[in-house]
Amino acid sequence: MLDEAAALPWVLDRMPPGYRPIVVDNGSTDGSGPIAERLGAIVVSEPHRGFGAACFAGLEAAEGEIVCFMDCDGSLDPRDLPRVASPVLTGRSDMVLGARRPDRGAWPFHARLANRALSLELRRRSGLALSDLGPMRVARRAELLDLRIRDRRFGWPLEMVLRAAAAGWRIDEVHVPYRPRAGRSKVTGTALGTARTVRDMLAALS
Image (cartoon, rainbow, N blue to C red):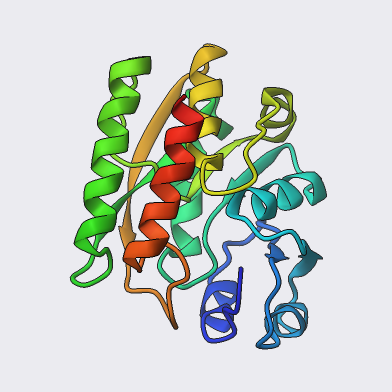
């Protein structure tokens, strides 16, 4: 998270039973960290800015065999995590991605178009027929660490899938609702944020 004080209460209140929330604070200045702690989350501080840096910090801090990732901006509902995690828990899949099905106004056109183009390029290179490279995903912690993902910016999600595919993982997706986020977007809600994300993902592809 980065300045998600408005979204935290809704997100953490909807954590499914048995799921242990680890919130990575990527440099918030709005009191998000203390709010998350008061709401019962384990808070990890990651001062190095970057989506991948935050995800990796959470991965290192996790202790469970299965780990889940999701944005903490209210766009994704934690109550969908069990459906995404189920194929990994039962051994049918090695990784599952939550393929976003957006509500009206939840996903700007430029961000959706960029995601579609990257998904098509991923299919061309790896054969994976994924419709979305979204931030909700589930896999086994030890195996994720073994992938040795290097990107610490916005190329992290794509590099994860590319390395998993190269390692022969069974990768699937489950549709999840995608809501308008709470507060101001810092990434793909802006044209500049989308451009930065595409730049980092193209670097991962190369």
